[in-house]
Image 1: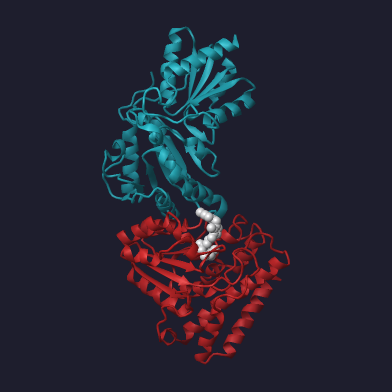
Image 2: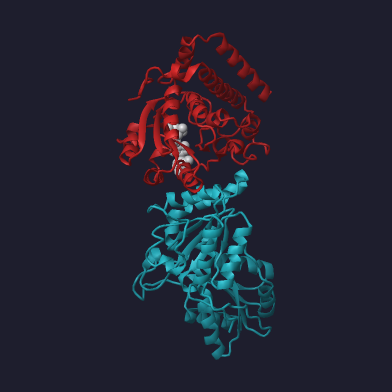
Length: 290
Length: 306
Ligand SMILES: Cc1ncc(C[n+]2csc(CCOP(=O)(O)OP(=O)(O)O)c2C)c(N)n1
Ligand SMILES: [Mg+2]
């Protein structure tokens, strides 16, 4: 099931168009450059707190940000990409990682509990999965759409199923995302469970899909769920390139989504644009951390 | 005898709730609210009541989400023992939210204690002390109609979550209970929740024996607000006893006696529920110290002082 093409739908890149593609790249690439810079800063001990990097899955958030403007965002601990793609202030994230009181959470949260008030992104408490019922409660109470993101491990938490079930029963507008990197720190899914959260969500009467981390595919399904005004569930098979926390790696990821995205964009005729955007983002990030 | 009002505490809770739900766009979340006696007659039949599924782990987090969106939910838990489930998002998110994210998460947590009638260990007693450990959580234990109103007024004018340790025995009360301070009393009793009712009876028992007790009623548990009358009384009696409906060991009664002992440099003792599981049989029951038990403790303390 874990393939870079799972759930592939032909024609989506063209359907979304060139502007979409470039903006998607701009956002995902910025997060990528940001987190590689964070890695550098951590490696030289300028950052001295636990950090949870998004590298490998940064385009998931970029895709969601392209089609879900104005939603209330409830992420988990690994959410630098989410914060940045939706347009929260990078300086405040930098300061938070540096442990400064000018950080996005006033220096109270560090990497894993960031918030972005300007994008309605609520902080995560550090209890994995807790954001899911909170997101459902927010949708219930406000009628606004919640984006609720968890991982393949936290999706196993007790509070997830009553939340999915209640959202399905009452048709609260919640877009549930499971970023499935097949890892609970270092323990693979097959060691932990034999069932799929997609089957569970479906059995509750919800639109639910199991797909790879192709950003166009993510955007397609997220948009579809959002437009339905009902809850839906997307399991995204994705890869974590670096350690759970910290900057090391345990070898090559199963697939390299970034290269696959570059190949798609080149097919659209982009080449110089990609280099320019990458350069521009790189220098922005370097300046930010100088 | 205190002042007499015509309303019971349950009436006041119901009135406050109706106003919040009908006029202030508030919410009330709970399980099986609109059935099984409407929670001791404290919940009105009106809009904005949210029946949540039977989930004591996700349920409080639904309330957190509602609070983040400004609905100031009332979250009802019928038995305080269920709080071992419900606590997590209340202490870990609601209580911390303001300090971590400068993001208020005000929830009015109605946590209801019951005891006796053979309800057993899970449904018995109050466990407000564990919530007093949690940074950012306000804890109160109102018993009378006016006290309940005072706690609600505090909630609605502040933006913190508040753990309201209710007791079923408060629902039928109509009278306020002014603190009693006599300069010539032998001992100061500081009582919490249903222990206040038993302490009142203990005072009567002891009075008949010629022992005079000052009884101070504690509503605010965290922050622990020391009433002027408490200070006055302790300075006069130089001996105190804190009595609670929660477990004594490491609980509010021991915590308050410690604080008071250091502040006033005098012996202050604690008496709460014993450190054993509550059974159903009369012998196995372990509930709020009875009037006789309180009276006996006072007799012992006074004899030790002599
Ligand atoms: C309630 C709770 N249980 C356990 C943990 C410890 N823990 C932190 S991250 C993690 C794994 C999370 O995996 P997943 O949800 O798949 O996210 P990923 O790190 O893979 O992005 C665990 C078990 C926790 N923080 N909270
Ligand atoms: Mg994982």
